[in-house]
Length: 126
View 1 (tube, rainbow, N blue to C red):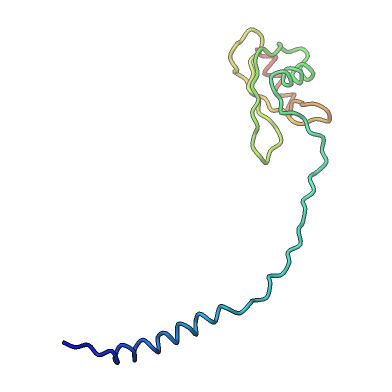
View 2: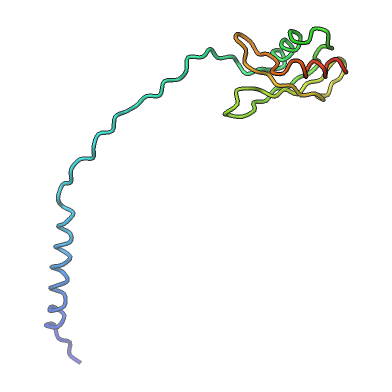
């Protein structure tokens, strides 16, 4: 069985020409993309306080609730990225467990109890 070279070339020649034509389409230089202006976000110039710990909560408690029992232990956690306040679990007097919860809010120069009236009632009951 003899194969004809002529039939193969008659099929390959148009295909090769079409491929060369398509390859040449992408060779043109396109216009450069428009320049994007860089914008810089300016952060608010708020004075920052360090995240509160046991010492900051103890000070805020003593300032807001002078007649309540002293804080024996405290642990403060952030309420999330969108909330600047902290939730603090704490124990009073001789208690080594953190049975109570209060919220600290950012004050002018220090942390303060967010709802001192209700938090101090917890301290008066203990």
